[in-house]
Length: 289
Image (cartoon, rainbow, N blue to C red; front, side, top):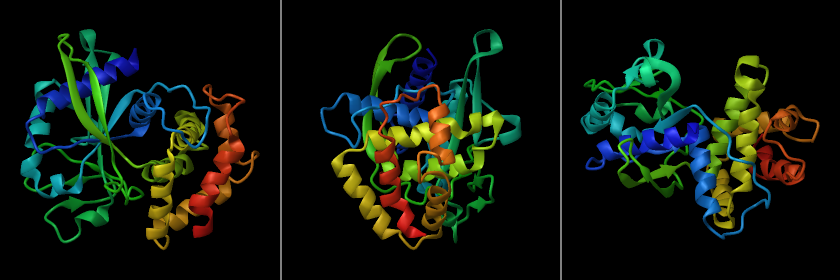
């Protein structure tokens, strides 16, 4: 039910901006759900045979290409779309988090939108103002974005997928979005796990470990080759070196914290290929330390 509500919410935003230059990149748990859904409809072999059940998630992570924030005029259709659809800025994260209350103005059924982008470094020598919390375009159009420094490969190897469903009024609608490459997803989830594996308010990072497994399980041979190319291209980047440290600390054996957290997930099954999972992370990240 939650995933269906998110699909409708995303389709309504896409309907509002369909005649604009905005191409949305969907990350986070919902992006991984869309990735798994797309791969299930294909017969292309993937890295692992057994995939986790799609997990529920409560929000949509919308990643904006940096060019949209640099040329903020292009963002006006998205700002207007959120206004038209009755989204309100979250008071503590104004203009990079938005929410729409559920029926009767309740929390039940609430939709939350997080707006993110790539690293702060992408905006050097531009009019855009940045800090660790937000990227603020100039002139302002009522849209900011949260910078994601580990997503430095955000625009590389994007996967295009079609979403088909119904708008809230029942009309059918189909639109295209982009998903980050598996390599980019893994980087973001590694960093998220590092920040949350000891946090009881964030399920100890269990869903991030699960998401990493889901990404690798659904990786095709072509995408794996692309991941190796991205690894080699960026091997000396500091983000890669820290990713290697995270893997070395948390994902090297079946008794490592990352694997234990994965096993604690309610979506974990004993037929998961944990050895393959550990090996794939080793190949992609460990030698970068």
